[in-house]
Length: 163
Image 1 (cartoon, rainbow, N blue to C red):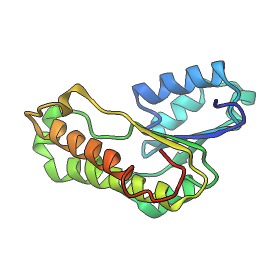
Image 2 (image 1 turned 180 degrees about the vertical axis):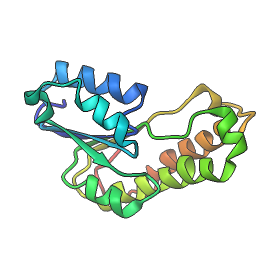
Image 3 (image 1 turned 90 degrees about the vertical axis):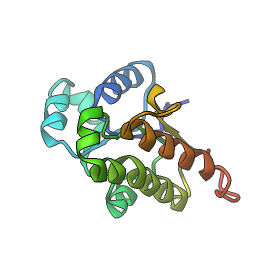
Image 4 (image 1 turned 135 degrees about the vertical axis):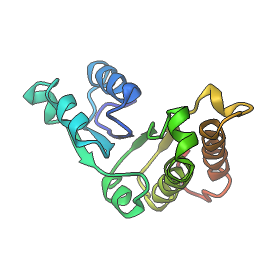
């Protein structure tokens, strides 16, 4: 499924992204894996764990999902998108609600719009959390909103073959 395909992982330097890239690069032969995140230190540390031949297929792309134009550039010729970027710490989200909304909701909407504008993307998979089910905190509420945005995107994709 992922052989000779280009895969982009938002939040690719997080715990999911690191393990996902490790598994995908061992199980399949993707053309390219793009790690999209805003943390250059984590990108540097992650890059140092791979051999030179593995690094030739793994690209580290600095960017924030809040920046739709940067997302569009990163998504060029991408086949599959795995969306793991989010602000996930409950106390931090409660203290910084606007930042959490910008990343978890607006960033997700930016990704949806950028993917819909791209005619090559086949699938987008967005990670959720148990906290989005009957949320009792801002983090859960923003992830619930993001989930709803991704589900609704299936209704307005038109004739595009993206799911």
